[in-house]
Each structure stands twice: as structure tokens, then as C-alpha cells.
Length: 332
Image (cartoon, rainbow, N blue to C red):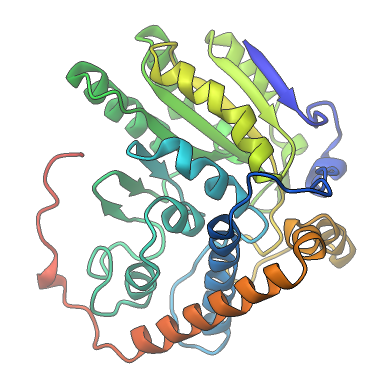
């Protein structure tokens, strides 16, 4: 089976894909969108912006990859994957905050402060706690998710393994080895593709031959495409796909046509300024604020203050000690 919600971007050229073709804006009414959904959206955005400011101020070292523009994807999927195992990637802060929460733990991990998720050992890209794992190794996530799904299928837990990948990851051989195994054994694997039209600095059309849909179908894997940032609409489209994966229908690939508004990492954006400005014009925040008005602004101000307070508190903590890292045990 396959399906599309919104216009397809498969046939467009590299420049159109790099600019992130038009993503439909929210409808005038937003039924099914809760205050918690809005708070989660702006919480992730304020967290990512806080990180970029910290890097500019020299308060952080290393690098980081923000998900500004893509926040709605994990926020929409989190309730549908409650209790499942989530495998994230290098651009995974939004995934962690939507599926796990724990703003302070994530920031402390990135800053190397006491109370970090992995005591400061994992940093921005490599996180683990029961039910959640992220890795900065491209393609590795799908192989890991396949193994986790096999474990849960054998144990009869009813849980699935959801893995987030980008469009650039489809150039990795591990993706196809994992898809082959998942399809052959009909494992409960959900592949969430955040296709933002650019792999670091290369437009997708310049590095990907054929289509992601065609590659999924070559393995007999269900494929669906979602081209809206309206959270209730995303849930309505993704829900049945996830239910089929959970009920033994085998793996599925759900491709989101989204946009990366920030740099690849903390400051390396090679796109022309006008291209990035065009992307911002279709961002979810402006449309949501226009429709929700004071409700949006109240939530946004409250969450901004919350993130600022947590950032100040975490920055005042002592450095993390690696000796505090405990054995994580078996995958849960």
C-alpha cells in the first residue's frame, strides 16, 4: 500500500527540493491540536535556539545539529508511538524532547554538566535511556531498529521500533540490508524519513537516484508520504500505517516533506540567503500564531521562560563525572 497526503516532491529538480517545495499551511481551524502540542512545538524550538546562542557565546564546544523547522514531525508522532522504541539520529534533539521530555537532562548532557542523560559521555548525538537511542552514524539507526524490532516480535511485546532518518541516509548500504531483513521477516519497523531536501550541503536531487518510494517498494515495504505540517492531519495519515506495522503487517516507510530552517550544524549553512528566507515563509510557527493569536503567544512566552530558567540552572551545575555512568543493561 502507499499513500500521499499533500503534493509529491519526487519529480522536482534539485533546486526546488533544496528550497523545500511548498508545504501546505494549517487550515483556518485546528481541531485536535492541544495546548500541550503547541507547548511541545515551541519548547523544541526554544531549546534549539538556546543551543545556537550558547555556541555563539562560547558556552558550548563541539558541534550540534538543530531541527528548527522539523519540530512538528516528532510532536505529531509521539502519541502514536507511546511505549514503543525510538531510534534517533544526529539531528535528534526534537525527537528526544517529543518522545522522552527531560529538557534539563538533555541540556546537561550537551553541556557536560551533572545530571546529563548519559553523564556527558554521549553529548548531542549519542543518547540512551530505556525506549530511546540516538546515533550520529548515518544508516546505523535502521540496522539497530531492525534488531530491536526482532527482539520485540519474538518477545510478543506488541511494541514497534521507529527509526528517524534523513533523505541523505538513503545513500548508506546499511539501510538496504536492514530493509531487506525487516521486510523478509515482516518485522515491526517504522522508518520515518525527514526529507528536508538537502543532505548537509547537497540538494537531494543531486545525490539520490530514483525515488525513496521506489526504493521502499523494491523490498515490498509499504510507503506513505506526508506533505503537511498540520499535526492532526499528520496523525490521521500516519496512524493507520503505524497500526498495520504493529499488527504484523511488516515494516513501513513514512516520508515527510519537511524543511530545515537552520544550518546543517551550528553555523555551516551554504544555501543562498533568499533560499532560506523562502523556507521561513512556509514555517509552521507563523501560520499557527496567526490562527491561535493570544493563545499561542501565552504558551510561547511561558515555554520560553521555562527553557531560559532550565538553561540557567543547568549552566550553574558542576561538570559531569564519567564515573557516574552506570551499566544501561539490555535494550528495553
